[in-house]
Structures are given as C-alpha cells and as structure tokens.
Length: 150
Image 1 (cartoon, one colour):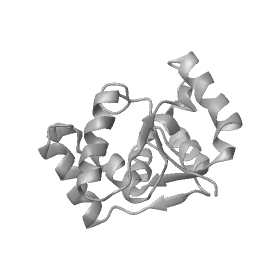
Image 2 (cartoon, one colour):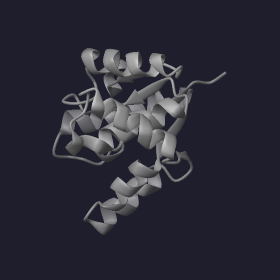
Image 3 (tube, one colour):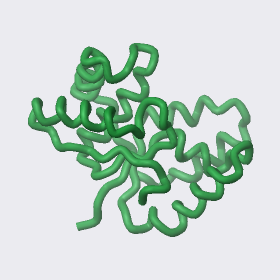
Image 4 (cartoon, one colour):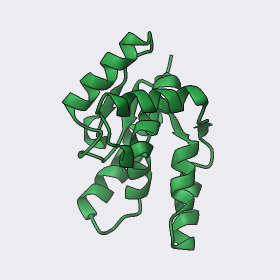
C-alpha cells in the first residue's frame, strides 16, 4: 500500500519561491524524485492559503501544482483536535493554521506531514507532544518532516 503524504502550504509555495534558491531547488527535486512514491494530499486550509497569494499568475501556478490531488476537508473533529494541540501549548493561538494542518493530516491518516516550517512544525519536541495527544485520543501518530528528510 502506498503511503499518504500531506504537504502544507510552505512546501507548495517553495516550488516557485526564487527568494530562497536552495529551498526552491530542494523542493523541485523532492517533487520530481520523492513525491511520486506517495499519494500526495493537501487540505482546504492549504488551498485557501494558496488562493490568498496576492500575485494572480503565481497563485494560478501554485494551484495548478496541486490540481489533481485529493483535498482533505476541515471537519469539526479536526478543529477540536487542533484546539487540543493549542490547549496543550504546542501552538499559540495565532498559529491556528499550523495546528489545523497537523490535525487534518492526522485525521486523514497520512504517514507524513511535510513542511518547511522549522519554527512550529518540523521539531522533535513538537512531534512528540502531538503524538502524545494523538495516542491519548486513539489517533494515529504522524511524522512531521522537511522535504530534505524524504
């Protein structure tokens, strides 16, 4: 069975972000070499964040990248789980979208959440706390990794 992988907005947007050439190169390499081995997923949150891209041409290109992917819905259960992460202090209130990405990916039973967000997501401590909450709720664990780890 092919594993499911969830990409947050930071990964999708890095594909065309020439402000950080190495990150863009790593993302494009990941897209071509690693990503085809997985079932790639995004969420309603990701799509909305991409739709908020100010430049219309760039916005269109970003949405085109994920056009054929399954989009996971933002459910009440995902909102509840995200709030549990915040109540435990994993994410401050202002980073609700990060908590929602994790909750949606967890409930979508993805093996990996891939992100370039090293401040709030791609951290061992964050992953351990998230997985403790998931285990207490009889939910699957999730690996939160960067593009470079797959």
